[in-house]
Image (cartoon, rainbow, N blue to C red; front, side, top):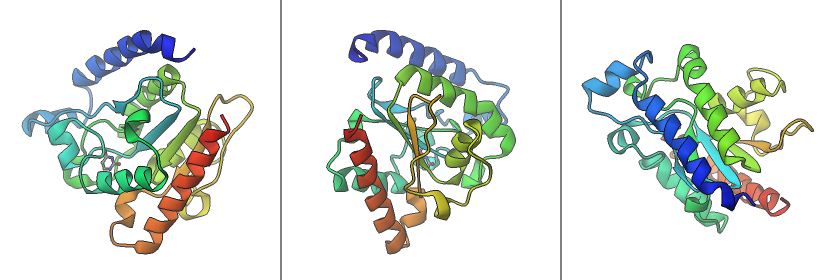
Length: 203
Ligand code: URA
């Protein structure tokens, strides 16, 4: 049973947290220290069937150390509510664990540096479904599992990516921040998230 392994999983996730706290080689470390920000490691159930992987923390997240607790987080909460799911039963994280200045896009160097922490979180949590939010986490995962490169998110959202060698499905979704001013995007996102729930039921 996955639940029996929770203490071990929690211990391993703690090791990741400690490593990221001391990640002085990160190009984002100085910005974190200068602003008294926290790295944002991830939050939720350590034996979650659903893992949600966003891009990088924004200002609210860096101030609190909690993923998706600002405006994009409100949309994520609506997605969970719309699908009748509890956010606390999922594990929510990002590829890049420190806030990039002025919310700029993460650089390839930052993704290369922080990506392996996401890989380890996936190995520890053993999710059934990984819902990626936005193009950076989608392309990171799809490249990693050799589905291809540089996919436009509008083409791949709401689809399942799975190979026999993988123990989980990847379902790319739009980033919630992109839906704040676009009702169409938001309804796509809410529909896609209901689809994620249907896929989870099959596991
Ligand atoms: N956007 C993200 O991608 N992640 C967060 O945690 C917050 C906003």
